[in-house]
Image 1 (cartoon, one colour):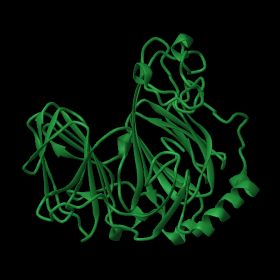
Image 2: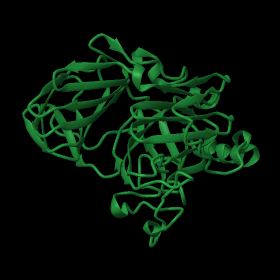
Image 3: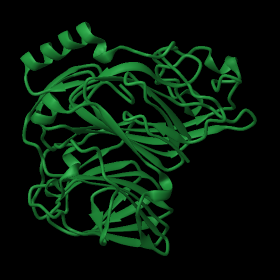
Length: 361
């Protein structure tokens, strides 16, 4: 799966867990728990998994892969998470990325802040999005691939993205058809002010509501209090997150880039993740350097999670049924002539949706 096959556990392991947070500290603390950030970040119900990719890819070749093939020596091509020279190939061998793979039972939300992602799927849909765009997939009985084309042949091709897995409720797991939407950067609402920018991917903030997610998403109902924000604070600037609208909502804050961030009365170093008390306002201040954070919030589903790789169900029997279904149907098959299609260099940012609609940006 893009950006890992694991959720609620170690990559590659099976998981059988109730969606639950890390150890809770005193209820008097705004920060309930904290942890260091690596590539994969700890989250809680209704989220399953979050990965952060920051790859400074070199110049591309005619196929939009790695131009200097010497840079591939010593890598385990097909499964390269080495970050040698500041980048990984992941499951790609020429173009970096994640070739054809299946998903069932959840949603993927891919926020590409820099660089591009090429999507192709078993529905025959395709897209290229990036430079601030967001793709939101109902990843339920679908195959797709995500490749990272290196469009520039004469300079580096940096990539910065998050992928977030948001659980589907049990009814949606059984009935929801695969779907996806793209939030184009030009249309995504922002709030803030001088030295503060808050990108609203999901939820409502300061009277501005995010663009609509797919109809079967847990985020589609405001009652579920789902909020996804990307925050950038210049040094010395402050922003206070309001309390969650629902008691019991999970709130995770991930300080992924910067030097020193103040959260309430506590000072935190870079690459720190934390669970916050969602019932309280959360004052943030960039104490040193520009500080960037991802915020995830939502009311828990409180349903059992049984997960193996890219399949998420609510019981062992349903998991076995899902694997049997995939073996039998291949979730509709794969209509592309390669497991890792990449779109033409001059395609621009575009999407072809399940209903046949094409959007060109």
